[in-house]
Image (cartoon, rainbow, N blue to C red; front, side, top):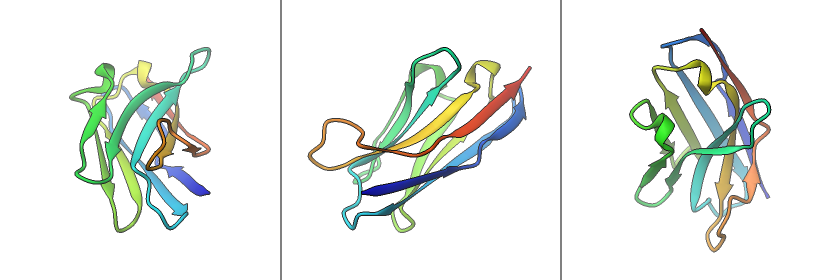
Length: 119
């Protein structure tokens, strides 16, 4: 099992910034990739970004490209999502997820952290 604990959410004004953190613990084998997803009220959960542990390749959904940066600290087993120029449409619960080697999907999920952007 992998336990994921997110932090860093909150209320921010349009144009503001937040940095989300996700600390992973549990299994001795580190995840292949870590990702961020979000779910706004009435919407399905959507992909935001992910980062590959080895090499650090990153991928973003178009709506956050240029405004967000995902990074990882492999020593701390922590992944971050720096979000800038936040918009009201970024309001959602943000979930951290882990994908293990050999898996084709994200297998473990955090409890989520609320991000609210006021207009």
